[in-house]
Amino acid sequence: MPRPSVTRRSAIASAVAATLAAGAVPLTTADAAAPAGPKGWVQSTLVRMTTEEKVGQLFVQQVYGQDATTPDARNLPLYGVATPAEVVQKYHLGGVIYFAWTDSVKNPQQIAGLSNGLQQAALAQDSKVDIPLGISIDQEQGVVTRIGPPATQFPGSMALGAGRSAEDARTAAAITGKELRAMGVNTNFAPVADVNVNPLNPVIGTRSFSSDPALAADLVAAQVAGYQEDGRVSASAKHFPGHGDTATDSHVAFPVITHTREQWEQLDAPPFKAAIAQGIDMIMTAHLAFPALDDSGNPATLSKPILTDLLRGELGYQGVIVTDALEMQGVRELYGDAEVAVRALEAGVDQLLMTPAMDEAYAAVLAAVESGRISAADLDAKVRRVLELKVRRGIVDDPMVDPAATGSLVGTADHLSTADAVTNRTSTLVANDDGVLPMAVGGKKVLVTGYGVTTTQILADGLTASGATTTVHQTGTSPTDAQVASAVAAAQGKDAVVVTTMKAWDTTTTDKRAGQQKLVKALQDIGIPVVVVATRDPYDIAYLPGTATYLATYSYSPVAIRAAARVITGQVAPTGKLPVDIPAKGAQGTVLFPFGHGLTF
Image: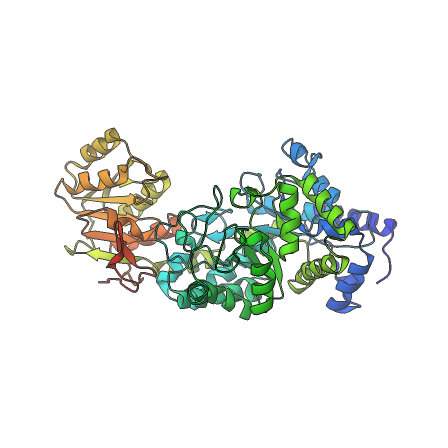
């Protein structure tokens, strides 16, 4: 490829600005990439990059602001510059990641405009190379969903596990991916490949497809295909080597997985192997220790035996390895932020996500390269994998999007109806001892109470549409005794109660006063039919003795709650099957409702 001149770069920047103003689909780098082909572009780009540019490709950071060029004071303490565009250019970033708390995801058109502005910044630098950004997000769906409506919402992984359909899992990923790509997001840190074998897991839970490795593997593979082949976004299986059997949250502490090597092979490995076989672009590391795989005490993120010897060597993975967020406590306990960055790269990582000390980490990596601690060959291999991903996923040829087109591409009527249909197949009727469901609600007075302002209202709206007279009385995740008494008072004179729960089992963090458990008991004592709807983990019923009617939605997203209303009123028969065992409270060896259980009518 010929060396681009500063004049050409000025022309590129001008062209981008002009096309953005006109609302057209702007600049691509296809004209530069096409003559040599993808492999030729990667090689010719790599040999013309400076060491500083190569190091920059190893970092993926959050940037603050709704657009690329407006100063935001929150960028200054982290990066020393004010605008997102300046952050990208200062460090030659390989990628960025979007969150609501960074003001990156206000609405589809804004997201697309921000994406274009950041790509413009990456492509308009005074450099010998044109390298677009990886723009990433955690749009797992369900409990981890960064972009809300009007983008299409799905109920999340465990709900898809209950649906048992690889086709539905792929469809959900395809729609999610297509909408992300329309907004300029080209990387989704999903699917979760962890096998949730611990019901007390505080960080994975319904983000996992199942406690069954085979089912999880099938659905992980389906979603990789949906994201990458149908949606044209990179997928990232997480969190290697497996975060499914922990009662500790790596965001705030340092978990240790006690599985043997044989247990890892049987329980944790299958979904990651399936993702690799499907050609996944990225695998994300876990900030946890796994002594059977590496007895050094290091977290997997910093473990060469786990990342290089096992993941690359034994499993044959050739794609990009990215860390989980380096601001998480699980990786920060042993070393300083700068040293963590270097050690992660030495262990086998290719990209560093969200270092909390960018200047220090960037300087430390650069120094490690210059000193030979990280060899030039190793650096080039990492950057090559990043560049190959960007070519493979079409980011090099097509980095920009049309913000005006998001209205016809995101949250379309077809996508929304498909999401409803998929979700209808996930609701799981766990208990219906008294035959309360389906409920003929026409003309009946129903109290809808429990967790969630939006959740209870959407559920009530669904019942009202079927003829019920509903009263909404939201009590939150940890009701006080006064709130419980108020809900009981509101239930007087009603024909039935529908009560929503959200991790009622978790009296350590979510509901320290066990208020949800008290609420359900008090409502049951009234003597009228009570339908319990678990809007997140299905395990709540083990902590709600006497519950005769229990529906699991695995998600409090509106699409899941609307589906629950359809089941309650008999518009849709429940067909979901438990993707996990529900153990008895305090007795993990005793199963109340087994994997595969699910009633219908």
